[in-house]
Image (cartoon, rainbow, N blue to C red; front, side):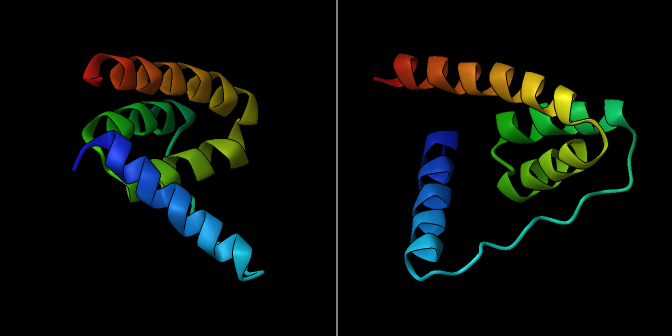
Amino acid sequence: MSQIDQLERFREALAHAAAKGGIPPRPTPISITIWQAMSLLQKAVRRGRLELALQAASTLLEIAPDRFWRRAGITLSRISVLQTCQR
């Protein structure tokens, strides 16, 4: 399953939870360093490991939100490039 398919599944699950008035579960942060969390986020997204990527993102949001947003911008731009190349 490609990253795009996984993101679409995640979007659908999130929309479903929101439509039901529910709160989507928050991934559990991992006890790792900032550097490990940044690396894990990037690698997990690249390898299509959604749950691990969410945990790494949750960790970064908790310990270094500024670094999460910087990484999120980089990661989203890469996904956008991938979507463009696959069309």
